[in-house]
Length: 621
Image (cartoon, rainbow, N blue to C red):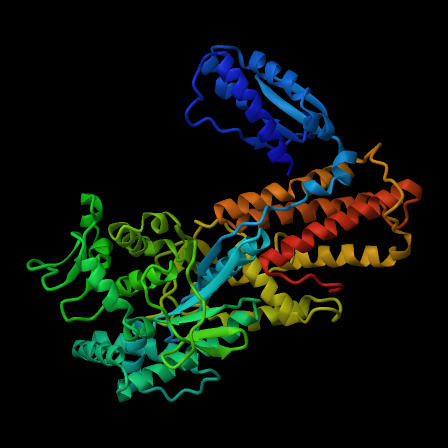
């Protein structure tokens, strides 16, 4: 990759410069390769001279000139760049030799083989009601991360954790048994959505009904009773509906890990014995947590200890003997890394999907080198406690390879919330979704609505189905935001088909495919291309194409799919500007050949990016 060539050359030069000045390597010094906004300032730029000015006690211009001189002596730099110049106050600007770039396949997005296995856990929706758009954001992020890591050579295994022993499922069961719903529903998950909201309302009206929840939780944990079987049937039916919904967005899994398996296969009991041998796991004897088994933060962070969420999350066993989610999650992670000394058995749940099952077979699943959990920012404390447990048990290597990919939640715009019957008299910018109140946009409802929008706006019905386009558009909408951004979901905005949308990307890809199909007989791979006398639009498009490998690398390193969304939107804008101003099929001679080659290069890069984002690559729209 081009940026790696630049960094390697500069690194070697700086080592020599620093040693000559009899200085140690500056702490925190980082060589950053930038893309100048103004094309006149080159295709790549370095500000390293400004960083070194104080250390070397020299003017940035002088330092930049010394680096420039040595860069011009480097064979790889001379091969790739036709010019390296210094600009005030000390920038080093490099100008690509486009002919060398165009003919050098080694500069494509290629990564060395990575002999590591990554387990990615995402979705993990409580199996007690239909999925909403907040769940879908999690799934889209997780699935895209899996595609990114596979693309660069990792072995990736995708887990969906099913919390079939949790409060939410227990509440739905209490609702089924103690509330009444006679409305017709097309899906069981929608009936449970209504029931879950009703039981939470009933808890407020009849507080003693909440005692039933504890009874149900005990029965679920023990297993084999009428209530336990009822819970299993409800959870399995909901999970199958969730899987069908996610499948429409191109989201699939390798393994379903059921929380009940963790308890019944003895994973928690083994974990309990391991933790009890440490000095940070003990039973409280006084105060609000008396009788609870808790995991103490070893650093005794007073600010964290005072936080209400932290107080709840450090509890692993409640005073009534019921395990918390965090307790089972610690056992699950010890298994993920293959350090618990126990394993599940598995049965086929669906095509290419395995599920933990007491009566199943043994398979080599788990045993990860790295674990990535896609969970919203509100679950930060439980993730901290899982890592603390690994450290306390001496698994420092594994703890350092545990990554929580945090993201902002999805809330509703005031207009959308009002349309759902939410009281918006406070005039807030956004309103949270609430399963307990039955407030939210269900995934299935959104997809149905988006399909109708696409159907109404399509000039012709060819190529992809409107439902496939609708799913792609929703998926891209949820991926394009910065990871930490709270997505304020607005139905009107989400169903737009122009601007920075999935529909725009698909139309652009189909356009490039159509152009190349019409010119199929005219494309020659043997005759040399001419890169001289480039139009501004041609140069801008080529420049963006050159940046693809490093954008992919940054997205992988930061586990941030939105980098790819930002890149492809700019890429398609540049291609469509090029298409509008530079005739392709009507051009002649070398110019036509070059523009067809550039179109093919665009199509190849966009194809790869769309596959990573989980979007289709249509021949027509």
